[in-house]
Amino acid sequence: EAKAAGRNSVRFFDPSMQAQVRSRAELEAGIRRGLDNGEFELHYQPQYSDDGELVGAEALLRWQHPERGMVSPAEFIPVAEASGLIRPLGHWVLEEACRQLVRWDTDPVLGSIAISVNISAVQMHHENFVNELLNVLEHSGANARRLKLELTESMLVRNVEQTIDKMAALRRRGVGFSLDDFGTGYSSLIYLKRLPLDQLKIDQGFVHDLLHDANDTAIVRTVIALGQSLELSVIAEGVETDEQRSVLTDFGCRYFQGYLFSRPLPAEAFEALAHEQV
Ligand code: C2E
Ligand code: MG
Ligand code: MG
Ligand code: MG
Image (tube, rainbow, N blue to C red; front, top):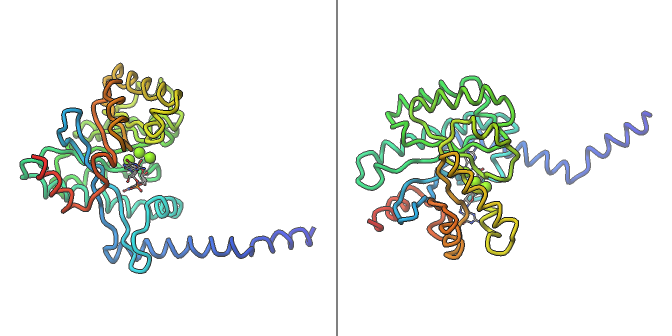
C-alpha cells in the first residue's frame, strides 16, 4: 500500500503537472499584481440593430501583461474564478464599465448605448453581489438602464430562487440581463420563463455553422422564435459573414455582434468607430 501511495505521489511530480501548478500559481500572482498595477483594460465590441444603429457594446476584459503581452480572458478567467480573484477583478470590470458609461453620458451617439458586462457564477452567487453593484452604480453616477449583465445558463441552474431574487432586485433599479452563449447550457424552459431576462444571446458556435449544419440552422431558428414568444430581444454573437447576418435577419433576429462589424476595440478606437458611422 505504501508503495502504491508512493507511486501515486511520484505521479504528482510529473514534470508537466508541475509546470501546470507553477503556471497557475504564477497566473494567480500575476492577476493580483496586474490589478494593483493597472494592467487590465476593457475593450468594447459594438452591437448593432438590424437597421444599422449602434445600440450597445460588450465589455471584454483584456490583460496587458508586462512580459507576455496580451493574455486572453479564456486563459485567466478560469484561474481567477478558481482562486476567488474573480471577485476583485469582476468588481474592477463593473467599476470601469460604469466609469465608461459616465464618460460617454454627454456624447450624442455614445450617450444612449448600453454596456454589457460578463458576470461569472462566482460573482453572481456571492451574497453581497447586489449591494456591491448598487454601490458601484451610486458612486459612479452611471445610469443603471445602460448597464446590462451577461449571465450564462449554467450559473442559473444553481440557486435558482436566490438568483431570480437578485436579478429582480437589480432589475427594479434598471439593470438589464442577457443570457450569454444561449443554447450551450441546459436551462429548462420553465426557468427561462421565470427569469427576469431582457435578452437571449445566441452562442457563436451555432452562428458559425448556421449555413452548413442543418441542426444549427434549426437551433438558431428555434432560439429566435423562443425569444420572440418570451418577448425577449435576441442578439447573435460571432457574426462573421454577410450571409450569416442575412439568414439571421430572415429568421427574425434583430441584433448583431461579431467580426463582420468590428472586433472588440480599445475605448478610443470604439469611440472613433461610433462617431464615423453617424
Ligand atoms: P463571451 O462573453 O461569449 O464573449 C464573446 C467572445 O467572442 C469574445 O472573446 C469576443 O472577442 C469573441 N468574438 C466576438 N465576435 C467574434 C466573431 O465574430 N468571431 C469569433 N470567432 N469570435 C468573436 P474574448 O474577448 O476572448 O472573451 C472570451 C470569454 O471570456 C467571453 O466569452 C467571456 O465568457 C469571458 N470574459 C471576457 N471578459 C470577461 C469579464 O470581464 N468577466 C468575466 N467573468 N468573463 C469575461
Ligand atoms: Mg459575453
Ligand atoms: Mg458569448
Ligand atoms: Mg462564447
